[in-house]
Length: 419
Image (cartoon, rainbow, N blue to C red; front, top):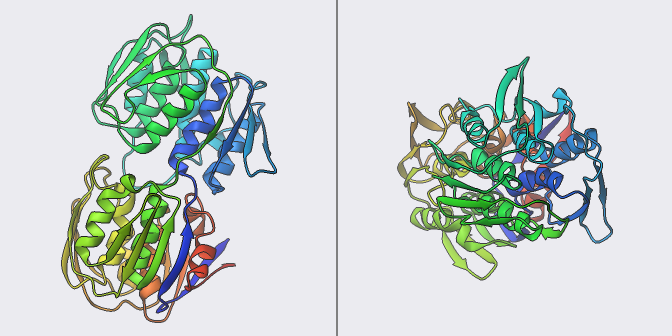
């Protein structure tokens, strides 16, 4: 096990290079099952969720190897239609994408129900609705979902009751080989949906409308392997932007798509940070004199739920009262008790948090309750008085590659240590 030790008070200065988007890489990696051969992926973030996805593919007969040019070669020709080990798929929410991929390629799938971060009820009913609408028979048995398509899936119109990212991804993957046309209405619009569609289209799929709320998938008979570069991670970029605003200093966040960060940029400016936006980078300058703001999370292009905890940490230092309303997930405020150990003044009523900011936080022994909560604790610790010890590092490593090293290169006094 690891802990992250942070001695607060050091401003951040310099350049930070953003990794590929985990939330795009996971569905793309599982979608490689559809193209029987050697796909080469670049800008793949080497975080624990990605390594776990490689292990799942290997367990099914794929080979995964690193190239000298930094790419990852995924050969899925030998993937077998069998059950992936439960001890692997149960650890990660993204393993649900294996259902759509196996169902599409083999006409059947049996996959253990997913794990991942625990912040409230995150059902897969919209995934199941999509598979069933395309003609699959669905059953549940001993903690696993079984889907059978018989003679193959058939295109149909699917209306999602909520704009679920996971369900949109799974239906796209499942529908690639379906007979006819599949129309996904009220589809999620996140950039990782667009990245998945771009990858599959590079492989020979016919997917149109990704990035809008109506996506059409015209079924094809086969895909071919391709080379593809994963888009940069807007949540990692946003995390470093908020860290710079909180700790103070001047940080140039590089290898980004600025349009993906519009809501984050707007709220940081509203809070008092100075931002300069360039073609593929954003420079954040802060003197730590921040003011409170009001935030409501909402599906993309609204404010991302995955940035809510990081902003909570920053707003603990902002003058005045801030409110954050969580419009996506119930139970996402579990990290608040950890921030209170550092002296934060936060009151949670249902899905709304009120933050009285402007008071210094102090170092404490805290623990991450999920991936983004862990990032929030790191941000809070960067500006806190004294030393903070952060446990639950395994959550942070699910989505951030070498966050301690990247922050240390910017001047933070931060180290990950084995305990």
